[in-house]
Image (cartoon, rainbow, N blue to C red; front, side, top):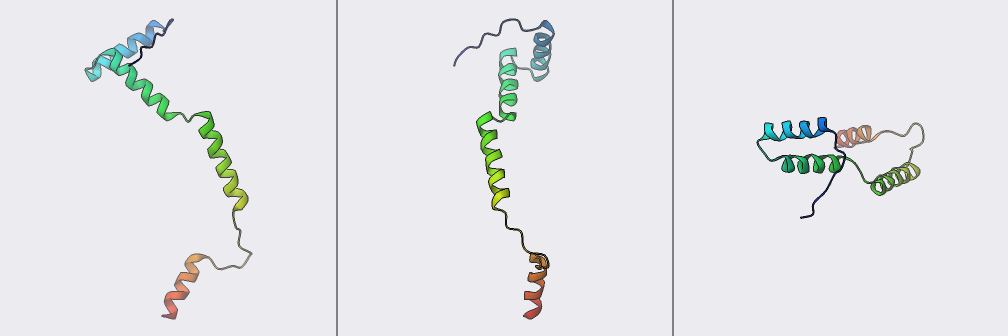
Length: 84
């Protein structure tokens, strides 16, 4: 595993990491890595965000809008059941 050196970490942040680690009864390094993993997983990478945006735009462009007066799916299903 690689090591990560973080210069200029505020003392208050170090103390908070220590408190959280103590509460979970794990070493500070373990707790710090877990917190970093959580933070990284919760934020999409810009490229993924761009891909999602492009996909949503494509869905919107290709969406089929039925003409006014078209019965909805529930209505059609009820009619189909009534015919049986």
